Amino acid sequence: MRVGAATDKGKVRQTNEDAYCVLPSFFAVADGMGGHEAGEVASSVVIQTLEHFPYDGHNPGDSLRHAVETANQKIYALAESNEQYRGMGTTVTAAKVLEDRIYIVHVGDSRAYHISDGAIQQVTADHSVVGELKRSGSITEDEAMIHPQRNLLTRAVGTDPQVEVDLVEFRVQLDDVLVLCTDGLTGQVTAEEIREVVERCVHPQAAADALVRMANERGGPDNISVIVVYMLPPQEGLEKIFEDTAHVEDLTALDEMICAPAVTLEPVGAAKQPSRPRIRSIYLLLGALLLVGLVAGISFSLYLNNVYFIALNDGRVSVFQGLPLGFGPFKFYRLAASTDFTEEDVIPRYRESLRRGVIVENRNDAEKQILDLLSRTKKLGR
Image 1 (tube, one colour):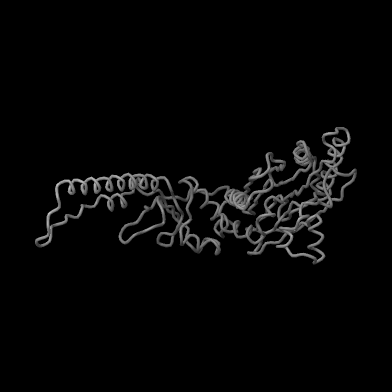
Image 2 (cartoon, helix red, strand yellow; image 1 turned 30 degrees about the vertical axis):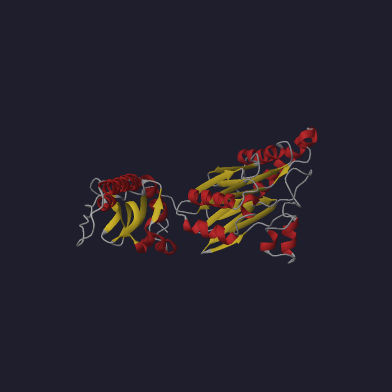
């Protein structure tokens, strides 16, 4: 498995009352509610309880449910004993992965999605007024996203002495994806958009960051938390697959374009020669333009030296320095490293992205993302 996680307070809220945890084979998100930082307390209590609960490997579902019930008792007791916490509660969606099975416990309107074979499915039911309206067919998914009562919960952890906990169990296969998130994401980003982002990103952290950024770009009215889990085989024993080329030289294609010899303008026929002050102005203007172009060219060249992308080179998955751009005979990239893997070794939905070029932050990130991408292939045990 590979995991990415991100959280953000959004663009409107002053604090972040979400909480999440990522442990080996265990993941959870929670969205707290209640004034005077009570929501932050509630979400923290449920996450901490789940983190430290002694799970029974023979009955994982029952153990998860018991953990949430224990957290419910703790939060309710805190609220009853402290006036400033009165009425606090939290959602929770937690997943335990055991071999090829996932066990999910759930209360509230945070969600779990399962992406498999190019399709996304919400595997939890929203415990909210809007969720009930959707299930009854009274409103559509699009209407639910703007419904005035979309934040009203019908079930939460810690608001009552007892809580009913949903338990979902299903089988997963290699290359499936699990997404856990709070409603700060799903209130702004649709399920199909989540699927598109996840399938476009090679690394789960990139997917998590992109989803949070998308929710914020659409207003970010609530706290946002998301965990993205790629079900991948382990990479133990994987040998270094990169063949470094000769030391990569500085990119000079753009420099050569900017520093090309200037064109000399000859007077035509009996045309009147411009006066000396005018000639001086023209030279000053040309000099200024050349200086600006030179500075811009040097800056862009330095930028190209620090950016990389993944693409195909003679049918092989490779790393390039620069940008996947070209202008006539000029190319703004050089080969930095290549692998022994071909396009056929890559999962089909990523092949088109490779043909276009996948831009990454740096050389190390490029190699890491290639390893992630190749770990989904038959050569690594799929």
